[in-house]
Length: 330
Image 1 (tube, rainbow, N blue to C red):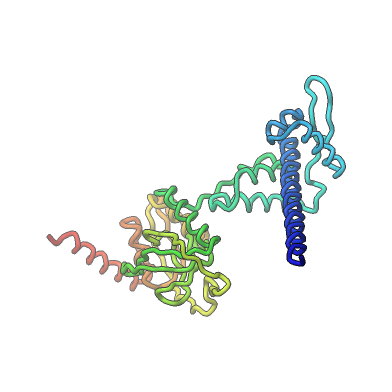
Image 2 (cartoon, rainbow, N blue to C red; image 1 turned 120 degrees about the vertical axis):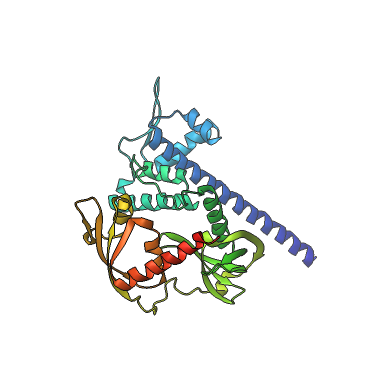
């Protein structure tokens, strides 16, 4: 008897909980629909109740009830009869009465625009907020982190990595080190990082049993595995360690031809550049002195001549002679 009563009580509990879930779903659907109505009116001005019903997939009676709900919520919705009539918002109604300043609204829109190429925001959200903020021009900036040469592949790889981070799924990939040696890696992705004009992913590398930061462009044959991991068990260190000793810098003077003017202005401070009478440029600057600096100046080919320091000029001459041997030997 007790078991029977307990069973009936549990059944009643299930019915009540189901009703609560159903009511919550209905509330969520109505809230989304109310937002869509306000957005549509802000975007289009006057719309008939039937047009709203067709757009939102509900009956005209439901739309009229929604309009009544908006009115009770102090949203200035009104209807007009006759030809050209319909449902409208009071002219000038936007979110300007909210606590957001114009600068804060612009920052929100800029943030969403910046996130578009990552797939973490949608153009629809940008358009809606632009209307709600009464900002007509939201197309004043475009951000694309992919390379010119292979944008589709880059976006697909980034999207796979983003999903792996969000869904806590392991990765498998090949990765070349600084001398070209390729190793097979398996890692738990923890965070995407954009720094120094490139995307990286912080992960716990199972091969090294430690945290590593991988450059996305160097990840080869990337696979998102079905295996999952508990992100709460991992706490990656800062992307840039705080105790790295600064590079030794050297003073460099160099002359660049007019052909590479675009690079000169892109890569050096304007106060370090002097334009010469023949159209060439003299750059007087300080740069980190390590292996990177040799490859950097060699990338200019015959469009640069090092004046100072002598040691840098002589090392580049030696490396150019070695390069010539690669092409003179048969």
